[in-house]
Image 1 (cartoon, rainbow, N blue to C red):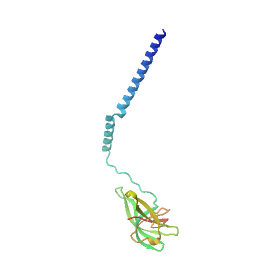
Image 2: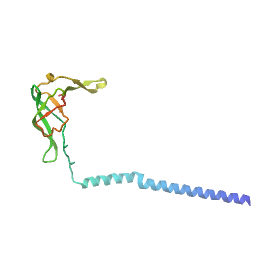
Image 3: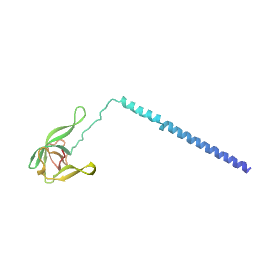
Length: 170
């Protein structure tokens, strides 16, 4: 009787293992054919392309910052305690595209204004590294491309105090 009971338990264990194996095979097949099959991935990619085709060509909506703390432009002339330059003012045109308009601005120089020059230095392997050096107001000349930085909103100001003026590479 014990032998029959052991055989009965062995068959029961075999049936359980077979059942669990079949369930696992079914789950793996289900996941593969519904989520991972190459045809399913291809169909998803085609559907995504069709959705994009249905949308009209929309341009991204661009918005300008409300405050501007730095401007770039070319020096027009130098004064004792000021730099007059043709500033590139970022704006949006009628088509919603980012453009810049040129306006004359005057940078007021204080004893705390920092003057630097930015250049790119060749490194090993043909790479270039930015290098910023300290200079004086005497190093500036008409025609230099500069970046002017302030700690106040200068978006609409015709003249403003600069915290830093930097000569940019041309």
